[in-house]
Image (cartoon, helix red, strand yellow):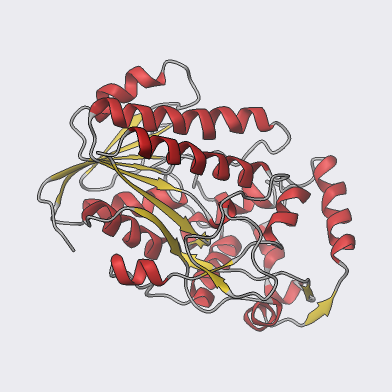
Length: 345
């Protein structure tokens, strides 16, 4: 690893699941002198070595704010992302796509030398039916019917153009699997299950079975382990994309074992129909289009991150998912607007 003393790093989306772990990892590194955390809403939480600033990237006047914040930065880590509302993709497009473009352009205007962008496994095209792992050369056309995948894929094309126009900027694209930690559980429950599904209903003894769906394979990573990969990307002279995931891949049988449940084969059309009805009636926020995308995700080969970043996750996929489930049941959270916890009796 090539160390750079006294780096000034700006992190967007600093108060969410990934952001809270990334700012803590960076602030704790002796080669980082200063961390500025950006978010739409300034948090009450205090992290030693981190200064908070509020900025809404969806606003047309945000570039002027970013220009001032990026002026002395050595690196920008772009994590900001809005998952909701899934019923109004124009809102998420303005925040996620247009907001990201504003961050990229402000990075170039300020002469920042390093840009680390949070892409996703969701940016990838459907994986091979054999289930073999894919490296970072796999096409990133996403699943076009899902807004999340469409936006992540579009930004890959934006960065392709950005790198051609700004070869002096070291661009790193992180493509992780599903990221979980105990303190993000309340936020993630609200995002995917909705505000009105109590965490206690996710107790293993209340889940009678795990559906055996073709293509159901989850690659899970503890958010704190992902943060260490982001820290390494800031401090190491590398470029390009990196897949991030922990072992093992979790299929229906592994999930059932973790939950103390059993596997039951269920027609995908039945699950999708039920999810579609719940989504259209706004009973749940997760769209059936995202369900379609999840069943088509490729398995990630993370050799490049191991070799070039010297990165290895310290927790297994089961440990990361178990931490999330503990947090869901207890209503765990942090003192930031996205991660505020909710206790259930």
